[in-house]
Length: 196
Image (cartoon, rainbow, N blue to C red; front, side):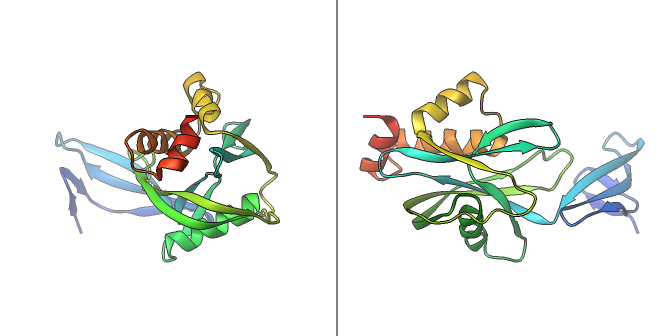
């Protein structure tokens, strides 16, 4: 049965690969220009989570790990995935605790974004976490993590230099900077983040 997806006609859908995190589907299509084509989509089993843990002094917690697809080390804010049918905040709380050992007394959603929306359906949600209390980290078996606490402004500088290139980290830091400058965060916290 042919389905209309915007200007695309989708003639069929076949799952060609699947693992616990992703599946890949292939779709014979009629393109918007009327010619035949094939569209491949990577479907994600989880909603991406990004957490910006901000301490009262304006420092943030970063997580370092080797990223298999790029075969390089990456410094990022705590990130992970949560099942699509789970409350995103519950997933974010779990990810923060697993990766850093931190728990937070206050959570504020600051970002929703689509990641690589030309070939994937991966969506992300991001939170600022404050009122932080340090505990013991509980990383998963796939994670070999380091943590470091750095000034928010230093992280922004690393973004501008290309040292930090993870998309969610870049987006979250820039969004938090905008919120701090525009008065959308607690004034004391914003001043600490901005080094005022």
